[in-house]
Image (cartoon, rainbow, N blue to C red; front, side, top):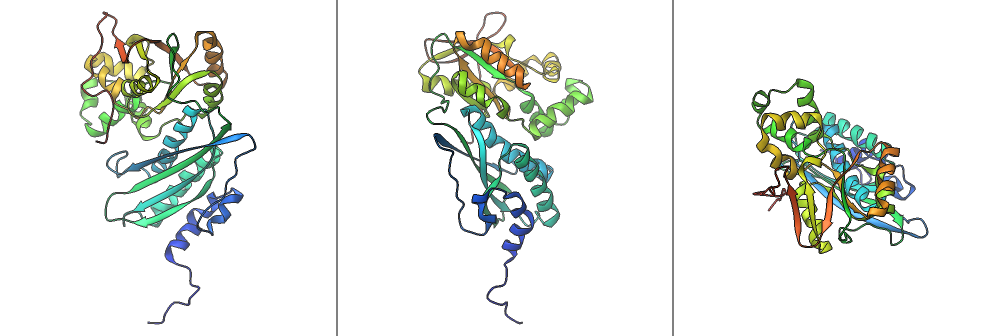
Length: 335
């Protein structure tokens, strides 16, 4: 067999050139021809970095569409940037691909990734591709920028602050329950459109980057809700050295989640602790509450006031009868 010429392009290089070079629109990406990329934040700005990986069978189902997997991988990182008040600037992606992820799969994956990279103005800067005998894994590291010293941390909530959350809570957790147990749809007895809404919310999160500027301007503390509102708010309270008292009846639910809850009231703990919401929970001083709510309306992101920051430790969810809801597991954890 004839040897390949020394300058022959490898299969990996062809894969990158075909599917990912078109997404690398930032000049610092160097058209993915080097071992690293270059990025310089604007003058007077900090660089914010976040990284999340998603794994087949853990964060998505192996038969999920390739474009949806790509978009979810990017969006869960964009959600972190939004909660810090940062503007997306670029990302790198590493893929561990099983043999089943062939050319048609990669084409669809790149199409979904490219669509969101353009939509959120977050170009591809680089990454890596490897083969794996295990499940598919997509790891994204995303970069954002904001004025120096302006990043909104988890630490910062103060007694008297209002606790606010964007969007609706619990849809994705219920959507996951549907995927794991299709028979639950019959037990819940809700319309097909409601079921599809819940499944879509699990398949594809909606990061709240449109509200990042308002989080940066008005919030005292913030984080994205990825592992469950109960647990994530508890983490925010812990590092802030405060407690939060929440009203379960005020937690925003979609009409689909309300229908499920009507069929099975015990699922309120799943809704509040199940995770995959990718909404923002934040704290805001009373004097800035109206301005923050107005900012949400201006960009079409629903924002709901669900409670107050108080002295103490942890996050307590009070039910209409005055009892405090208890959670066997307040948030998702890999370990």
